[in-house]
Image (cartoon, rainbow, N blue to C red):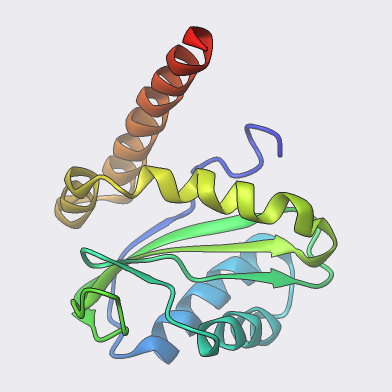
Length: 163
């Protein structure tokens, strides 16, 4: 995966009014379809099929819905926050209001899990989740994500140089 494949530019939507998983996934699928040119119904179906296997909720109000999608040229992601948290079967039984949705080309399965793990590492930070909930604009959220991603890259590079 190249560094810029999953950059954050214009991939944040704040405060959508969703009442349940279906409505969140419909909003996510619509946005990802605009980004990728795929049919939103196909993206929605892939996300729902994956979710049926088990919740992609991580806890602390965060979920990482993801799916392998046929006919997708390159990985795509979108970060969505909700006006109000929804029930999502998270392991800590807390409702979810921050979603990072990632779709990946079905024919690039070998890079899927490492790519997903890289995205997930950013969201282990409860400070980031809290700051995203408080963000007043998508620009502010993008700045938060960029700063944290840069800090994480520095830490990872420092760790690699010590080994």
